[in-house]
Length: 299
Image (tube, rainbow, N blue to C red; front, side, top):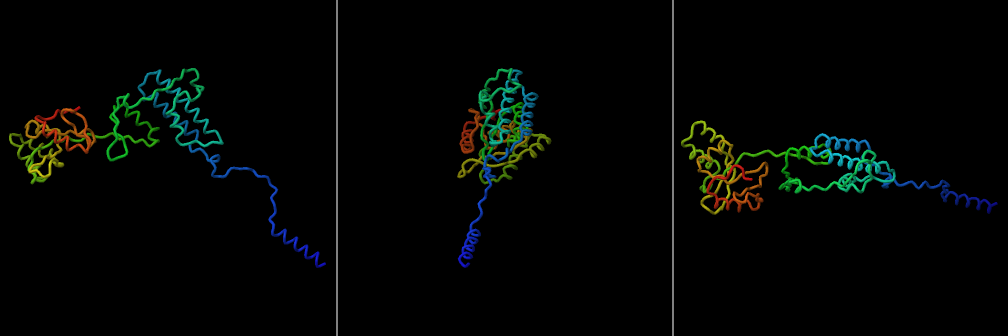
């Protein structure tokens, strides 16, 4: 009895210590964080809406020829079809930049869609800013670009599809003209220079012209050698005050700003922009060579 009871207790203890085996079959389901279970971040409805926005823009805003519009619409249909095929595949994810890659690729990589099967699709050449006669330069001290364009280009850049991609369009405004005053005593400050300019150039003017001169002159900053007895000052004026000062021929125009670019200095002869680090050298060269006011249009 003792042996049997001992063996039964041992068997009971062994069954308690050993966990039971599961007889269920493994489902081989992917982990929740695996790429196969990640849902696309863009729905087919969003893709359809985005393509319709671009398609309507080409039909209404673009000034291209009818044949070119037809080719671009056929190209757009093929891109939309290929992109929607990626959305409906349950075993693949849709990268965020796949649409941009398709727009930058050639048309030969995609099959013709049902709406464009009767059209002869051809690759669209990449039009660089140089070929479009657009002047694109990096904007100093910021992360943007400065684009010199016309009204039709601004209309293209303002499309909502580009705004959704983070492209912000800002049209700069024009600044008042600026004039340079040479060989001013270095002991004078900005207020004294402004008073001296108004006092020395008010002789022979009418009361209205004197009021225009008083309200239209604002001394901004000085430049030139610091160890010299004289320096040069840049002052901001209104167009009417500038006209009065240039007719007196006492103050010579040596600087003209273009739009909102604070770092552009224009030379009289070369008529090309100088960078900010060469601004002083350009102004010194202008001082030595200037004998008459610069023209109103420096381009």
